[in-house]
Image (cartoon, rainbow, N blue to C red; front, side, top):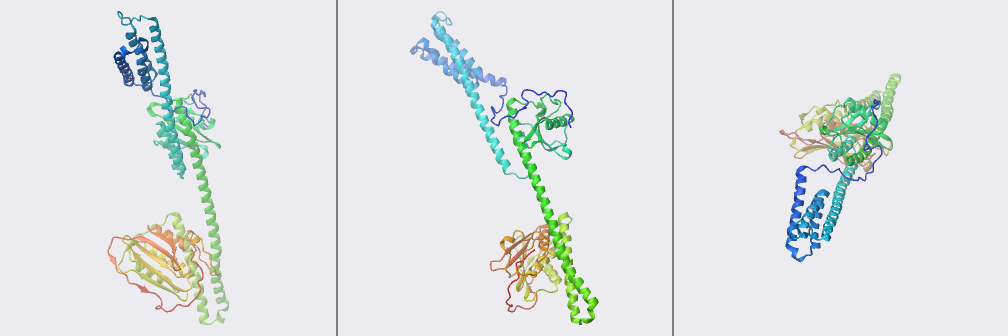
Length: 556
């Protein structure tokens, strides 16, 4: 709560009522400097002298009563260029000069005919009136031009805001517009924790407010009226504070300060400030709404992730544990009834399920490392063939009728990578390919360009449905299998993508034109000596493959 100021009255231009965006004038005209006035009156005098010379030249062809018309253009020109006072000065000089032509021969400034005297007087009045009209037209033209310029700036400002999504960038754009159009220091305060006003953005940067400024800002929020600056409400404040009002109430405060020049604004500048404050209020409200939407999205994603993890834990823990417990229980109670080969097969199944469970727990730990930012890749120059060999050693078998073929380009450059992370990423991708491969070759292909090295896992299966390509790397996302084969956990590909990007690479999924999926890991190469590579074929030599229908598309 702000303290009550000694006098809560405001000045007539304190903007207690909303002001329309249709501004009556752009800015109040600044006082003319001495040199500007000197130029204006000098030019007006020269124009009258020019008219006098012209009048002397044509005097013999004009009647005495019409000679004053020669001076009328000089009056209009002076008023149109420099305003009413130089125009009035030109009209008075013209009247004096006119008496020279209409005077008696003996006395140059004595008007012999009373009618001529009244002609001079009427000319002076008409010239003065014409000066006033010219000044008004000049002012209206200048005002219209300034209004058009401000309208263009406000339109451009609105268009700029429409293309910004980030909350801080939105508020900064609004503040920059205020700073630019009014030539003032500006800041925006928004209620934070416990409804305390916090400086969101300031131009130039400001760390804290003075005691008077903070109380003036709080008063502005509570009463939805301007305070501080040149107003009587907290006049000691260095800033003029304007409430940012929307349909939801006051969403913040806009403060302006002209530094050593003070915060005094003209009525027209107050109108412009109010228009900018309206735009800033909408901007702040939009930024707050965007923050709420983002918060809701994060909450929804967190909830979805939690539900997916619980579902995964229920399925992917229960299935291997049930198999392991069943095997152990059977061997313990009925082991004597099984021959050695059956017992070995049962133990092999239990070991396979244990390894599967261990991989799942490892993926969960890897996801946690990626989320917490504790993953720090250790870059070293490595040989791609070494990574491929290490991955193949981890596989103790793969589906019958499926062969793994490696095709590594000779003289492949060394690559700066984390060996363990690259091995695990490649293992997860290969494990995913073998899990859904029913026949054919799974090819590990390594190629390079002048600046990159790519490791691709290719299969000859049905590929990935186009609608799943976008989400194939999402956590716990699984492509539904067309048969009832056990799907993956939905973590392996997500971990591979996280590891690849952590090392500065890219992992993308695509489909082969002739069928099958391709997962490509691309890394920048090291500028070191190249290491020759040898292509090799793993498993049995190539032979005709059995004809079998594919099980399903790949999944994460």
